[in-house]
Image (cartoon, rainbow, N blue to C red; front, side, top):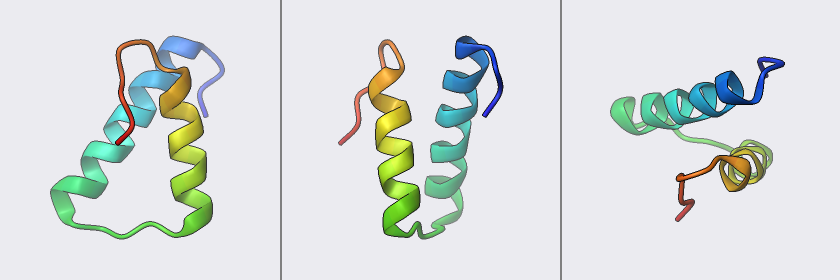
Length: 47
């Protein structure tokens, strides 16, 4: 992850968008990591 929070949040959003756009799967570890990062992102809701 990028060291600056704002970039880490942007990276997380872009990572999730890329997975959704291309219909890519994620494993449990990736899902947990993305959910944890998304929970720390202001204005981003994990579903």
